[in-house]
Length: 243
Image 1: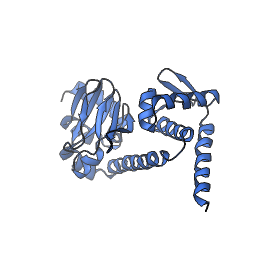
Image 2 (image 1 turned 30 degrees about the vertical axis):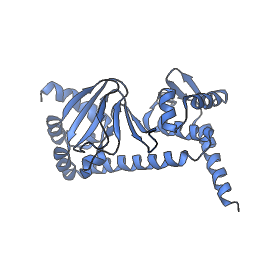
Image 3 (image 1 turned 60 degrees about the vertical axis):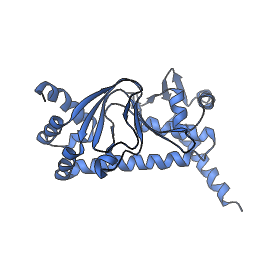
Image 4 (image 1 turned 60 degrees about the horizontal axis):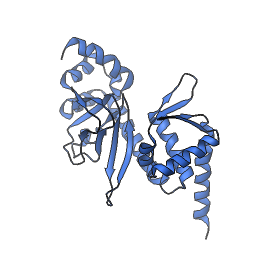
């Protein structure tokens, strides 16, 4: 791999990914073994059941992780932007891919083969720990999605929107969170129709909690959204306690 490529990739990966914890020599060795792949909008980066032989990093664009339930309905698990890693579970255990990964727009993906990744992680425990943290975060998010689907639409929207904004959004210099997502994408994540998402977002806008500018959702009042989610959790617990 050429020196210009290494010089361009090293700062990006150091700033944005767990690979930043590796010594320069170890990082360069992985870069030399990895491969940059380009995908068009709608392309499958991999499908559920494909061999799990690599870890992937989003360099540019956005990626959707999704599955299809028994009734044939798509269930979105996560949206990823530049700097996010995915495919880590299969890369570590060597089993088949458990979800589909689809490019939501033109995307550049850096692919690191498991046979190169695992020895490096074993030699550098801090990087292995960073991977474990990603796995834990994704596991908690999956559990939260399941729990959210038992809530009323207003609470589900507030909790899901906050979670996505905090995990996948961007914090502006003034401290305000913003998230780039279409209402259709948000609906698939929340398991709501686009119409229901539109109505719930409109309610939150009127309450002064968010502002919507096209595909950009700006969180104006994190505390207010948290209170909606917390109140829903309290009501849920009270209902369970009733005889």
